[in-house]
Length: 367
Ligand SMILES: [Zn+2]
Image (cartoon, rainbow, N blue to C red; front, side, top):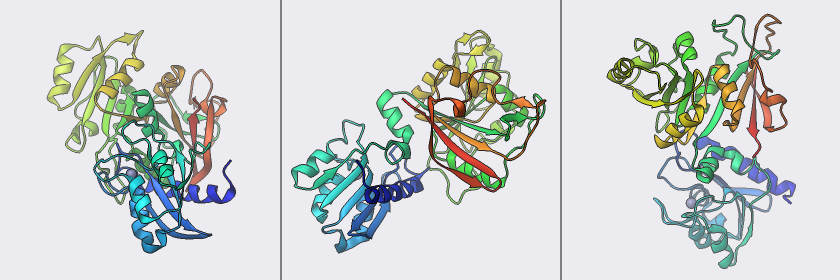
C-alpha cells in the first residue's frame, strides 16, 4: 500500500510529467521528484523527445542533494542505452537511496530498471496499484505498447442535460474559450485527430493545434472517415494541408474519381470495407496503426463516438459539460446505448477541472 506521503510526491511527479505533452511522444511522459525527509530537493520531467529523461533532469536540478534522497518517478527507470544512457545507472551513480515508481516499463528493451537498482542495493518500491499515478499519466503509451493497437480517445461536449445540439445537423457551440484552448492542449498529445464526414461538412474544421504557447513536436494527422469519399477539398482541412497531413479513410464504394480527386488535393487515402452503410471502424483503426498513429482522438460527431463505444474501441473520454440546458427537443448525445459516464465499465479519473463555465471530466475504460 502507498502511504499518504508517497502518494503526495507521486501525484506531484504525475503533474510534472504531463508538462511534456506534445513534445515527447512516442516516448512516454515522465515526471520525477527527489525528496529528503519532507523537503523536495529536485524535480524534473521529460521535456523533449531525445533529450534527458526526467530522472536526469531532477538529479541535475538537485545537484549534491541527490545523495541519499528518495526518487519518486511515474515510470520505472529505464535500463537501456537509448538516445540517453540508462536512468537506472544514473540514479545509482548520483547516490539516490530509494526509488518509488508508479508504473512498470511495458517494453522489453527498456525494462529491468527496478531489478538493476535492487542489485545495486537501492531500496525500490513499485509498481503501485494506482492507475492515475502510473499508467493513467500517459495511457496511450502503455496501451499501444501492450496491445500493438491504436489508443482511441473520444472528446465530447454536452449540455447539462446530455444534449449536443439544438437541432439536427446544426452545430451548437457549447463550450467557451478556455475549454477550447484546453482541447488544443489535449490534441497536441495525440498522433491523430479523427472526425466523421458529417462533422467535416457541418463544421469545416481545421483540426490543427493552435492557441498554445508551444507547437506539438509532430502535428497530429487529421483523419476523416467517409463511406463514399465525397469530401469538399475547398475546405479548411485541405486548405491547411501544409501544416499537417490529411488521411481519408474511405469506404469501399468510393469511386476511383473521388480517390484521385482527394489524392490530388494532397490527402493520403486508404480504402476499407464497409459494414452496412458505415465504414468498418475496426479496420479503420488498423489503418491508423499501420500509418504509425499510436494515439488518436475522435472529435465528432457524437454518432461516430457512439459507434466506437458500441464496438468497445475507445479507451478514454474527455467530457466537457456546460451549464446550459438545451431542453427535451434538443439532440441527445447518443441515440442509443449507455453513455460512458453512466456505465460502470468506465471510471472517472481524477477530479473535475473547471475551464471558465465549462467542466472537464476524464473517464477511462477499465480493462
Ligand atoms: Zn530513462
